[in-house]
Picture 1: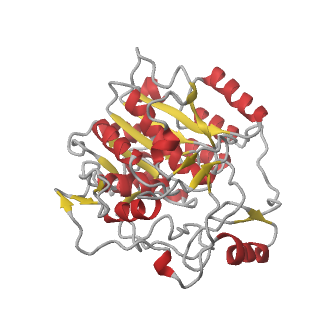
Picture 2: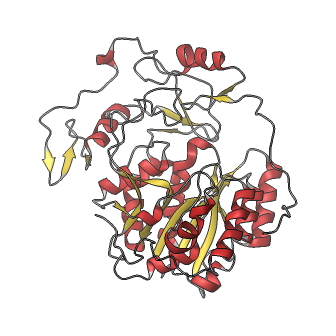
Length: 425
């Protein structure tokens, strides 16, 4: 194994303001300042968003009356117990003509939309919206600023389009991925790897991204500010691109740029008839997860965005795979659903349930966090599509890649899990 390191530096300094509010994404130098912000500025005890300054890249509330603590009857809409049904859909009791597959979607409609003036305003264009995803996606417009020539050329349609949702500033990680697990992915396995991102408020970074796309031709740059709160927009933009482009591909996979993918195992997976079926949506299943209401939790979800106490079963956003017939179903459902900022819950939980798509578990999408190299040949070569995840750095990607080359020279272990084992319903 080579001891040479890539010629770039990794950030080592502690951020100047390390404590970030997970609702409005303001950052603070001291934890006590964040607590005061949460207590008096951003969120009250009922989970209602107070009027704050504009949030870069997303929506901020218009001037609305302050919510009085304890007066929940004036805040939360009453969803009647005896709801009218049309087939498997709930009908709005206000006779506005809207109907929803999920009761939670009806709740959000009553709270944010039905008979209400638009409550959210765009920080950039100052248009007011009622928090529908379609208002951000603009489905009837071409919103991509730049699409690389190698993403999905008409004469080389891939069998699998693998979209890596990437932060616009992660130039080094994209470079390392191109040199390691994405190397020759199309030539060897008919898998096209594309990086999807938004834009920056810094014009020099936007120019650098466009230059990167001219050089490598593997970026999809969409017209929204690339912030953590906009992760769901990024995944819906993925569905939009796949729905309108790349006609002829068979599978779409989503992952992040801090993940290591075994493209050879992915290729074997999608060509195994015992696992492939219509309306396939498979990954690491997260069943019956409780919604986190603690504002200090990284997975904090304010009640004004999602009222219920558990999420629908969803697949981890580290990596999930779908057959192409699911793309228009999820995309259409996403456009009519209320926004939440956890993309995996939104796409594979709320939208999949609304579209009637089953989420399937397969052990090959299980991933590890750490460096247990005694297991690497089992994990990297013989079984998994995904290995490491979450805050993966370039050094670990290089280690995994070199270990994978070493493992490919070894014979399969006699005690590895049967590669023909089917996915679980």
